[in-house]
Length: 406
Image 1 (tube, rainbow, N blue to C red):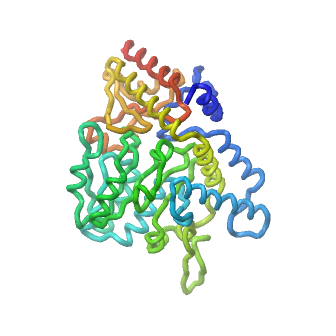
Image 2 (image 1 turned 90 degrees about the horizontal axis):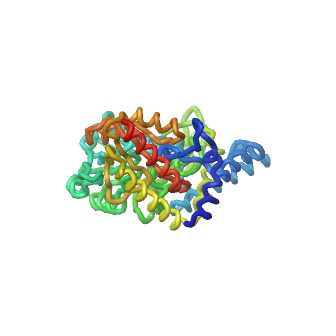
């Protein structure tokens, strides 16, 4: 991607044109949430200005338009992840709710004492705590796959841990803390060989990698809109039809029912069985616009741009005196974590913010990972398609100043 092409792409994100604390904004907190292109803002604005109505439940024109846009958004998501059927796409509030849905519906109805759930040391709290709650109630056992010294999943240990008691393997596609890209196809194939189901947390993957759930072979795939240039409060759970049909409803109310009486209730068909109440209509429409924006780009060029920029960032960080990279995985996407020897991470982040540089500091909702590394947290710079070398150079220059000063 040449500079002119990238400038045109970057220009579609209005928030990036602002100043913060008297400096041009350098936004490097994309693993937490991405900025939104004008197309997404326009799609949300159009819905509320022209088509604001509830979906599926009225015969008037506005509801008809809203329903068509809402269900077209579901089709867009299905195409984006190569789902076989759009009714396998369940709207959620985000990755967290999607994982909780599987945990509470499938987990509570299928798991029993002694069954094993395999997670990895890399997991976000959203892919740990729901399974802990289920394990406490069912007697299931959580086992944790360790990492190697680089920050990659220890695949030999993983394969050794699989067995007849393994019922579910639930892992991140990409680590939000280290940027590690897990070999999900290999992970899924090995789980299938012992009869286990698989859930992939794709929150950090969908903005960087082309995701094909059929090629991966998983049983569930979850992601959030706001990490894919879309709105907050909207996400997706994709699951195989046969599994979703067997799973009991999780939340109850309107839309997820077929017929209600005080003598009993029958439930709606997929996907509506898992979509109780008025959905986040504007969020779904905004997410579809974000996906359209991504699909309009040359994804190969975007991937090459992000990979080259990530390599440039890592190489530059290695030249900062007193800076230590945390994790050097074989394949990385998006996030780079690091520490400065003489500066507390929170202090460093505050000083960077004073120069208009936004990045993340803390445990990144991955406290077990930090504990395994023997640290309390890190500074994390995370990239998106709109970042460029100027952004990275600004961060590196600021870090050199901090290193020299302290």
